[in-house]
Image (cartoon, rainbow, N blue to C red; front, top):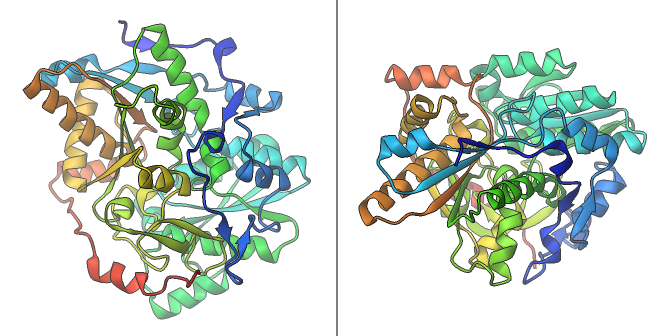
Length: 450
């Protein structure tokens, strides 16, 4: 095949796929953070249209035409064949990657950012708050708010705020206000800084700050870049496109690999495929979720009820968690530093349809550099975790002689992560062990749900 498989604008999907219509067992309901009773998303935080999508059992949700026109700025995205990497590895495996780094924000995140901004605008909202880890989500929402004429306030995890200053500049260029989290601008931020002035922050803390501000203002709602069902659904345009592109070359993957932090990027790719496994059409399809060893939510967390944020303002979900008060070490894959995981991914993992692995960041950057030196694309640290596993699996094929088709979720480029590459190339990068004692302490604070 050629190196690149493209779709025309007319072939771009016009509907999002909702996996909830095809789950063999329904998702457990969310629980209210105070009463612990089954609940919907808090109405003051989200517009009703997104609430409806969150709990919908309809298989297909139409993408509004206005949104489709914005999507066309970067969609459909290319499906690439990694010929040069295959050759360097000497593997009989065929490696394909769906590349989302061609969006203006450099990642998959705008697929849901523009959608969330659109539905908020339709309901008369003027302003959105959010959190961001590595800055990818904050950048995407800043861009989405710019397109739809909304104000945007971003609480950026402090470790990333200083590691990735150009992400901040990107958000500010698109008109957003960005503050390092924890901050002095919220009650929860001030409390955390009082207890620990040097706190490097976490997504759980940043979520709490953004939620607190949204609760306090009538003109503001909250926007989340991952985890929730409607967010994962908006990303399924990725997997639908990939399916069409692979069909054009008569390929169905044996294995799909992607990174997980909250879960939206990889779910967006694999959900349109996992339905084939659920229905028994492709029972041998292997779906591998990859996370950092420093924040191994699925591989070493426990499956239980927990808050989505540090302050306990968000609903309680049944998910794999390291404890909502856990603050992960400051690894460079900032987008993977979340204590929990998307309930849909947790549910599918619990049912045996997906598996999970954890990787250290030094071998992850080694894999990223090998990818950059063969394919030319400098990947973000987050999807580089998946690249590490793809290389491992391709080398296993070299040993066994198997000709597997491997599909990689390449969620974004690493042009704003060159400081991390500099640390790796200069030998200064360090690995972080799973902080068992910190996790055990955080798990002691789990909510009591009957």
